[in-house]
Image (cartoon, rainbow, N blue to C red; front, side):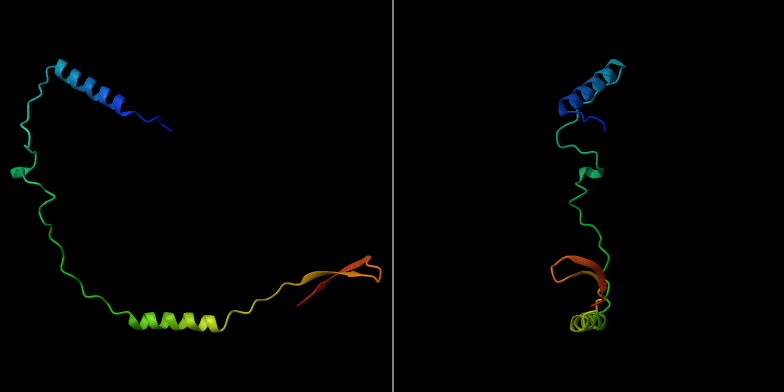
Length: 105
């Protein structure tokens, strides 16, 4: 992962770039406060944008009813679970283990 530059480092880099630009013969013009690079000096974000007209929505009430009905029916009849066989220990009269048996329940 690249180490991130601090704001001070970025400021120093910009200052060095400006200094080298001026040293190479470039000039910096003073731009009056409030002047913008936009056409007619207008704020682009204040202009209202053109929105498309609203589209008619497709009614889905019957689809929603079918889904709700399926949901209700699934709660009434939960799916049957198939239990797996379990291992049970068979002991003698004194509690000593004799063998293991598989029980289906």
